[in-house]
Length: 176
Image 1 (cartoon, one colour):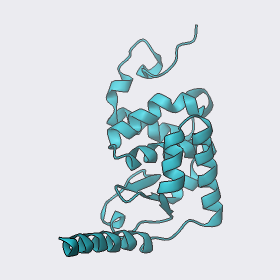
Image 2 (cartoon, one colour; image 1 turned 120 degrees about the vertical axis):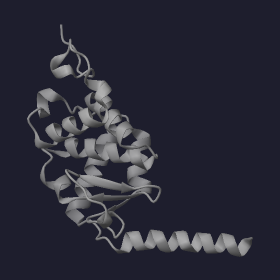
Image 3 (cartoon, rainbow, N blue to C red; image 1 turned 135 degrees about the vertical axis):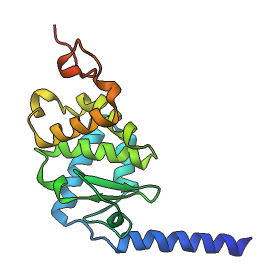
Image 4 (cartoon, helix red, strand yellow; image 1 turned 135 degrees about the horizontal axis):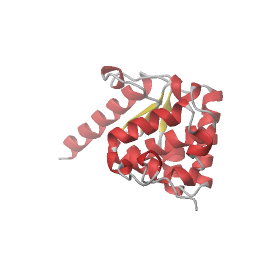
């Protein structure tokens, strides 16, 4: 039984190592942008998510061998669960208007670190966007906002069935 356990642990370690070493690390500039976005997440009250991103996740700058086998469209990042490896694609550093938009993307990935699927991750970020100060008033024309809004409508359509609110967004706060 002990030998079987050791073999399983060794296989897990080899698999994890292969995921890490077949992808490039972030540059120091990229790592600084990630740390700034994580700090925003933490300051806005998402302590658990910030802890997971800062202390558990390993960030990579391109696809490992496993991610390379899956086609991706409009991806800013990808998470290998349960290995806590987050791949940040060039679009993550190119298209966001600022660190708040990068924080929104990382908040999505933090949900994956907890084991949640795409639907939950999109819904969680969209419902909590106001706490990041990621609002339509400030970011409604940004590439990231428009892409994530479209993807959220596809993954969590229940958030967009309120005819009495602008563009049917049930999370949009009414102002009187």
